[in-house]
Image (tube, rainbow, N blue to C red; front, side, top):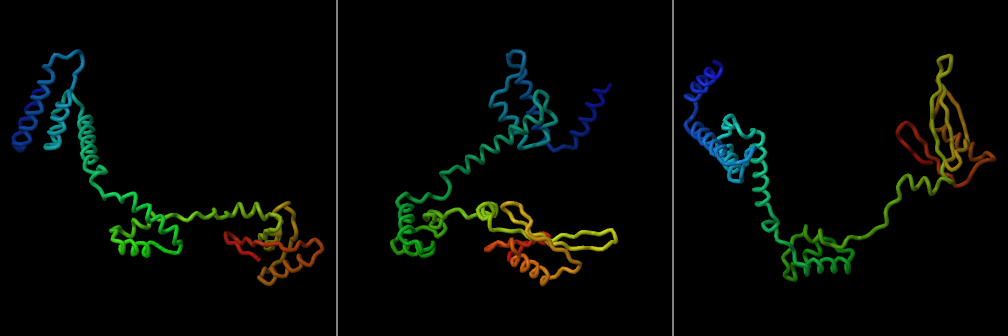
Length: 239
């Protein structure tokens, strides 16, 4: 009874469908019957022509996926996407792009840039145009000899190389039992993690910080040629 109702419902829906969709679905069903009629072992074997028929009908009428019985709709969609990638890979192959610059011109650009290190891409591009060489300025900048510079020193490397002459200054807050706020200034030497100075005040100002540094320098344990780094929150300044 259920199959009869389903068949009647499909017939009613088919009356409202366009003729092209019905013909594509009939063609898909007939091709599936032809595949099942082949003398194959236990499982259905599909050829490249079968995959081409399924993907072609799906490309023309996507609604035919409901009529698939021997192949899952997801499989046909995967075949269609694979064919789409192959088609675009063929269209975007290297032979159809921008023509490559000959090796002689690339070497000429490198030689001119090495012989004239102060020349930029616009100047070299102009000189090549005078010689009758048609090449873009961006291509000249691409094939110019790159100047090799030593790597810049990072912050960690700087600290490691100059730790014996660097001291860090940190400002911190200490709440007391009477709900008062005391502001402390700590001067710490980097190489030995030695506390060089500790000052406390209730009203920190820039003059007070400068006074603490001056007192520390005048103390007997002062070290000359020390760079002070003040860390306030996320900012850093040097003295």
